[in-house]
Amino acid sequence: MSLSSYVTFCGLCAALAVSPGPDSLLILRYSLQQLSSGIAAALGSALGNVVWALMVAIGLAALIEQSAEAYRGLKLIGGLYLFYLGTQAVRGRKRGMQDPAEIGPGAAGVMSSAGAGLLSCMLNPKVGLFFLAVVPQFVPEGGAVFPLTMLLGVTLAVIVLMYLAVLCLFAAKASAWLKQPKVSRALEKTSGLILCALGIGTAASAY
Image (cartoon, rainbow, N blue to C red; front, side, top):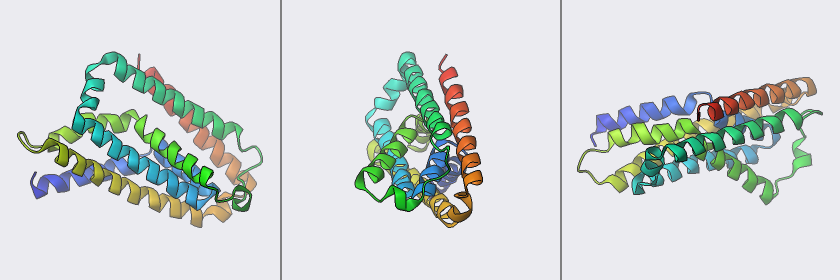
C-alpha cells in the first residue's frame, strides 16, 4: 500500500469519526456523568474498530456480508440496542445529571462504560459497512491481507479515539453549564430521542 493510499484512508477515517452517530452521543452522555466513564467508553469504541478489523482479516466479516440473514440480524440487534440506550436516556434523568461525587469512580462503572462503547461500535452498521466495503479496497491484491487489514483497523481506532477524547474533554469542560437541571434534562431527552430514532431506522433497514 502506497503512502498516498494510506493518507487517503486516514482522511476517510477522519470523516467517519466526526460524522454524528451513536458513539458520539454515548461518549458525551458518559463524559457528563464522569470524565473517566467517557474515556472508558471511548476506549471501548476504539477497541470495537480493532475487533471489526480482526473479523475482516480472518474472513468472519465476509461470512456476515454473504449471509443475508446474518447481516439483517446484525442490523436488527444494533437497532434494538440503540433504542434501548435511547429509552434509558429519556427515562433515566428526570432529576437532571448526577453529580460526579454521587457516581464514584468504581471499576464496575468504568468497565460498564467501556462495554457500552464496545457494543455501540460493534453493533453500528455504519462501522460494519466501512470495514466490509471500504477497508478491503486499500489492501493490494496479493498483499499481506492480515497485517495490512489490522494496520488499517488500528489506524481507524486511533483516529476515532483521538476525536472521542476531544469530545470527552469538551463535555468535561462544559459540564458546569451542561449539568444545570434544565439543560441536562433537555440534553438527555434530545440525545435519547435521537438514539431511539437511529435505533428505529437501523432496525427498519433490516427489512
